Length: 573
Image (cartoon, rainbow, N blue to C red; front, side, top):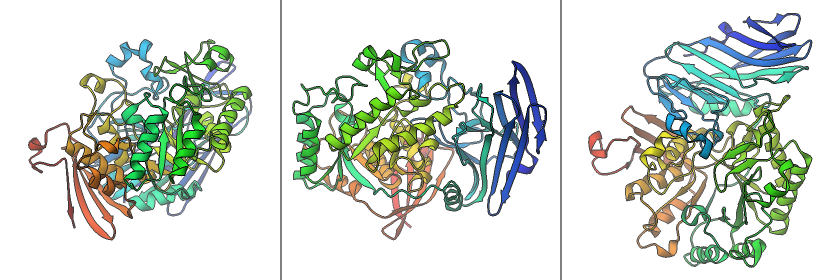
């Protein structure tokens, strides 16, 4: 059995005291004039490691790394969990290269702020084959044997798992640069497990005391991927009645971006689009027997918003006092400072109106990463994000949360549903030059990869939202087989199955729609990628076992010479 030799680790700890830099290298308990380092190891069917730093004076952390040797095999698969929902995440072969912010993207940063969507401002990537880094949890897989490493807490800072195949080493890093501490600091709370897929992930969430989600799997319709911001009351009701009249098996209608005047001004409704207000539309949805959902990005505001013009004191500022941009969407948008009570009071008011006056059942909360885009003197990005998710849960109470654009670890146990991939597009992999930008870009191909690769979170951390599937013929560039692949992956790997299609325009798509929207008892038994870009999925559905082969390579189906006509082939086993 493979095993990380954690007892042979080396801790490298760098810090400042009175602007003087110090470095500690140790593999056991340590004590000097500035601090004490304590180790605690628990070992049963897994191994838990807790490392505490107890300062004797005020210290400013510079880096914390736990290094261990590891003998990689050429057939190993290395899973990399990306920084947030949209970041590409998958099992890599040892000689593959993980993408980073490209040179093209760097030239466009002043205009498009691509670096704000991911970890590019605080984590460097070597851009070398065999060098990978991921967040919160990861594993090395050899066949069906998983060597798992997971953080049991991100409250003290993000846990970054670095793997270097060339150097045969694993370095576990705490994201804590410039954090000031003067009391006990739990630097690492780590879990190491060897075993099969089910065992390691069940054990991980059990050790974190994350209870299985109580929310139910749902199917539904959302406005974004057909109408984008060009929505209106009439468009929502038209699709609502089309679904109802066709007796479609869905649970929820979700109104996405476009109902508000500007992003940030959530209670300022565009009355040209929604003349009767949002409660009216929510009531109409309820009258037809569906739950109602609405989209918000609660921690940001765009340049054109009233909030930005009237409350620049609410905007997050960097160490130089500059307002912090969080991205380039809309008229460009800024992060709100969640450390200010005035900001929290405003957000509480928004949720009170949306949930208790407008009576929405679910809020899709987007661009949540903005809450931790800049750390404070005494709080890491991880701590800010964890506190933010607790705050959101307190605001929303027992209504449903769909998290999106969020670092996943802090969301465990706090959201009911969570996007686990980037936005799908109206084509397979966007324009060729967009593929050279950043890891959070819109891409149906990347979304499919993420849905498959983050499958283990489903029904453990939350219910997975793989984003939407399409069957329509209008306003789309996906081929029929690509649509089929997307629908299959969403159905079998997700628990929140959405479409944005106007089904009144369907011709012969109704049967596929109904099959995709049926909540069946599906169980993924095994997933095996190969170096040609084919993924074999063994699964059980209604007590029958099947195998599906999915082509996610950049090569044509004929080049692969394995399957003649289909992007996806399914057969009973």
